[in-house]
Image 1 (spheres, rainbow, N blue to C red):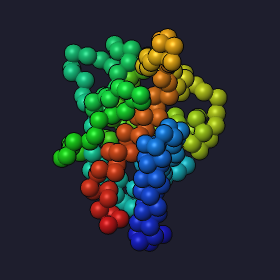
Image 2 (tube, rainbow, N blue to C red):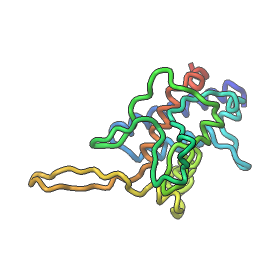
Image 3 (cartoon, rainbow, N blue to C red):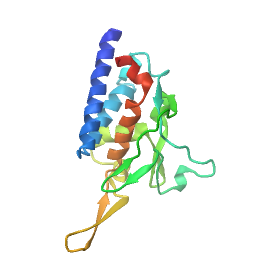
Image 4 (cartoon, rainbow, N blue to C red):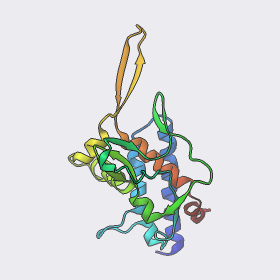
Length: 200
């Protein structure tokens, strides 16, 4: 394919990403799975597939916005039962991350892809882990028997407490952690000037 044809494919994937982000924000949390598929197309290289960014010759030099915080040297991911490293959490009727600050730091795409962003059950998860678990196990590109990593992402760690009309307390487990984490990945990509420069 020519570079122009590849850019056209990138434009299409960015459109998918924007549409899924919009649908997610309107209440369709399952769009997180579609976000995973787009990011897989953009970033995932293996012996059997080549990412779009690699086809374009851009992956190794492309800078992407990262909102992930680094754990202090004295704290190991394996010592934490749970941790979300993707910026400030906003807890309310839903769980989401605060807006991405202007001039957020960037990292090279391969580092972004493998950067630890989440800890569940004392296990670190990179963006790659979350994306491929959603795409390959949870219905993005394939449906497969859940493994312990997908079960950990589905498990409800946060609990929403509300009251019904009778004033009784209702506690609702807020699972599917990977949905709102994937939504954050979409925001990072959609705020990455180097990526968007290809399609403007």
